Length: 310
Ligand SMILES: [Zn+2]
Image (cartoon, rainbow, N blue to C red; front, side, top):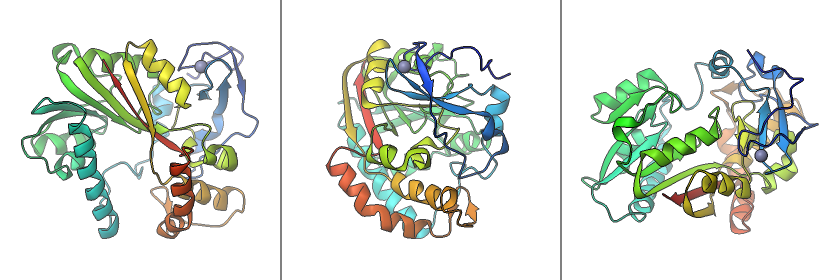
């Protein structure tokens, strides 16, 4: 059951009961899931986060992710595959620079089919493990020789592995979880002393958030259950016991998604979508690339990378 809309909702990031409803509610431009219309968006006056309200039940949550959801192991085209491989190798270098431990025990929340692990090409440098909510993908990861637990991170029981992880990664997941506070606490429990928690998430108060408004790609409405500002993410990490919090900008493709949302939602262009992307997706990426680069250079990116030490 969704919570009673009459009850003043509590911010999932800072737990304050002091928020206001956004007048321009985003819509599910990418997948057009019917139940999306049942949800709204609120801004927390205490920490500056925004969150979906009412909160979806587990059953509703499943219905928000259609079978063709883009993260479900679709093969990429040649061009995007090459970009992805380059990205994975540079990410491997970044993660290895965070700790001197070898092999580095890396635990990934939302490991997918582990293609990222394979593409990191760092033989002997890592020991990979993780959780993956999609059972088929979790099985594919296990078949490829990785230690992947099926299920969501919320369901995951860390007791046997507490204190064993050197680097815990959570890329574009923290905005999807029902309780980000519990998620960060669990990450803290899994990490060894001095272990690093790092991930990516959309960033409020970016150029895209300000100017695209309800069409901003960062909303990914209503699957992004909470959106953080730089400050609210830092607050959450500190509250859960992390120190040395560092937040940097990430070059990203959200401007292309925002433009696609605007073409669909504001101009009503009949663009056919497959797994959330229209046929002109690559064109949109190239058109918005200058904006992505400008935002990155002026610290107004739609996306941030955080890292924090236990
Ligand atoms: Zn808050």
